[in-house]
Image (cartoon, rainbow, N blue to C red; front, side, top):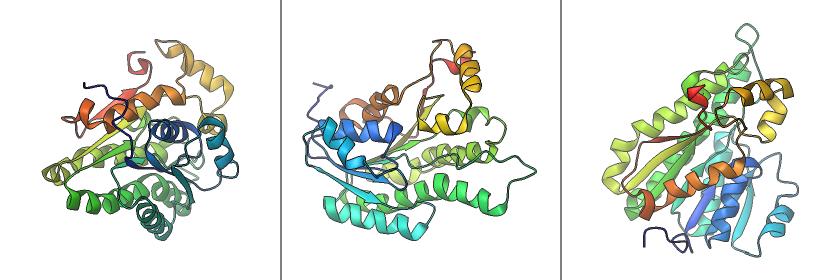
Amino acid sequence: MIFDLKEFQNKKVIVTGSSTGIGFESAMEFLELGANVIFHGNNSIGDLEQRIKERSSSQNFKIIKADFTNLNQVNDFMNEATNHLEGLDILINNAGTMVGRYNLDTITENQFLEIFDLNAKSAFFTTQYASNIFKEQKSGCIVNVSTISARTGGSAGSSVYAASKAFVSGITRSLVSELSPYNVRINAISPGTISTKFHEQYSSPEKLENTRLKIPMKRLGTATDCVGSVLFLSSEKMSGYITGQILEINGGQFIS
């Protein structure tokens, strides 16, 4: 049977940026399907344990706090997470955010670097760390989280964020030749406009409504709309011959 709900039982899974939104919903689904899951966050983990326990009776999780703009903390996080799991099967690179809307004429070097450190550099080096484990065991799966603006370009003030996510899409394709000989797959999802805290913080209600009207499905996406694609790309049975792909989740937004 190709569709097997038991496939993820006892799998060792890390989901970065999993205190809210797409990361949280994805991590919760893995947990409910029997995986051992590492949740990660930085500023939004205050009530994370409570929110997990409200949704699941599983005890097979650990929360690790780390600032992913700091490479030392990224490496320490991966070390602690894989030691706790005693290995790794699946890495979901979801950590990242816009940080702020900065126009070309006002953005500073520090702001530029913070955006790239969080969205691009952290994903690259978690992948590097995981790949060493995956290569040794001759198996593993990486799912990155990009964004529609990596392909279309960002709106005003989000050009650097869009470029940092374009890097994520780029390495997803580029690392295939290095990872495939070791039976390691790497793919990405590319969400469109998803109704999460991200857009509550960085987009006005008017901007979101204008976007909604242009989407053929006439609604914004939700975090749970993205979970099925994360699971699909993580599943060896359902996507074992898929690698280097960017799966668009946007309600037909490109067609508008």
